[in-house]
Structure formats: C-alpha cells, structure tokens
Amino acid sequence: DTEVTQTPKHLVMGMTNKKSLKCEQHMGHRAMYWYKQKAKKPPELMFVYSYEKLSINESVPSRFSPECPNSSLLNLHLHALQPEDSALYLCASSWDREGNTEAFFGQGTRLTVV
Amino acid sequence: GENVEQHPSTLSVQEGDSAVIKCTYSDSASNYFPWYKQELGKGPQLIIDIRSNVGEKKDQRIAVTLNKTAKHFSLHITETQPEDSAVYFCSGGTGNQFYFGTGTSLTVIP
Image (cartoon, rainbow over all chains, first blue to last red; front, side):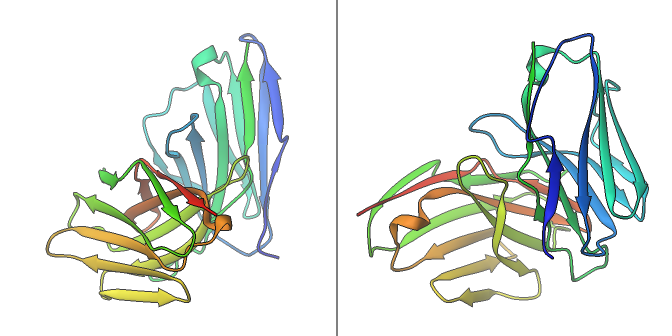
C-alpha cells in the first residue's frame, strides 16, 4: 500500500465555519506534511510532523491548526478562514531518516471558502 | 529557507523529441532533489530523485543531472509521449524540509 488518502476530496465552507481535513497513510512513514497549492502555482510547505511531533511550521496563520493523533493520521483543523485560503491542500508522507525521504502525496482536498 | 527557481515555465515538444527542464537552488546545504509530475486534478507524483553525492541518475526515458558547484540540476525526458504532458516540479531541500520550483507545463504534441 503506497497510498496517502485524503478526505474530503472537496470542501466548501463559510468564513465562520470550523472544519477539518484528514490524511491517512499505512506505509509506516514517520514524517507527514501539509502543503497548500494555489492554481497554477507550486505546492507551498505549511507544516511537517516528525514522529508525531510538529517539527516545522512555515509561519502559517493560527486559523490553520495541525494535529497528528498517531503515526498514521494527520489532521488540519480550519477556523475563521478567508476566501484567499481557497486552494488545494495536499498531504504527504515519507520515511524520516536521512537518505530515504521520498515523499508520497495524496490527491488533495480542494477547499473553497465563501 | 531554500529558494528553487525553475525554467522554462511552459514547454511544447513534438512527440518523440526530448524535453529538458532546468532548476537552480540557493542553499548549499540542500542534499536531496526530487522531481514531481502533477496531472490535472491529482497530487504530485515522484518520478525521479537525486542526492548530492551523485552527479547523474537515469530511469528508462528519464534522467536527472546535478551540478553541486553551480547549484543547478536538470530533468531530461527522451522520446517524449503524449502521456508525458503534465506539470513538472523540481524540488530541493534537506531532511524533511523541501521546497518546490515554480513548475513547467509540458505539452507533447502528437
């Protein structure tokens, strides 16, 4: 199983809503990532978890709150988002050891904030 | 963080011709350089990668070269096919921290 599964595939939310994006992998990877991708742009790194601990936060606004409940799951909690936060949110995972960091991406959640 | 630049932004080639995409990076500490292919509506998929202790790597029709001194690396696709049409991203970094280039939209004309 070399799959990273993201749910939901599409999400429309209002600016006052609270929602969560979910990501799951069963490859035994110990590093998990959230990226944000706007149309016709490259993915931008948001957060990295290593062994279930947040290791990198790329100065992401607090309205995005990541959570790693266990080694297979990664969530992104959303609250009070702005329309400009509309984007494709990608989750990825990889082994967390030097020399073996090939990252596998999910298909993404397309988020629209209205 | 790392700054990765990528050229060209768009590339059209005839089927069977070769395609070359070039990237430069800024952080001399970067030691891992994966290339991703992204098709419409899908997540990026790793197609080839290279580490800083290697100058060249090949996998069938795809090859990547790395020049650490000049801090640039390139993707070469030979005998292109219509199914190679997609957006290609180079990436560079260390450990778990990777940054993407701006992307190249490749169109292979049958």
